Image 1 (tube, rainbow, N blue to C red):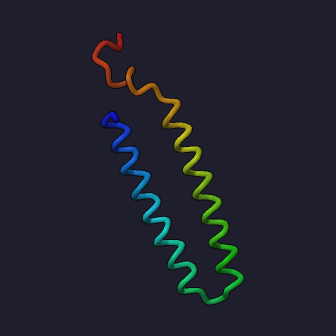
Image 2: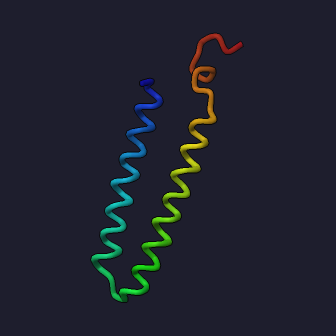
Length: 72
């Protein structure tokens, strides 16, 4: 596993932990149950979309060419 992949995995784990904390607080401290459920659903769908798009952009970068000494 390369150093870039390690940092990316660390970033994703932190993102998931923070997202789980946000969902927990949205559901635990709800004022209106229906609004909390809808907002939680919107947040989870948006987070999944952002995570998938981020991963596809990460995979599209050629990290070897960026960090190699013989770029030219």
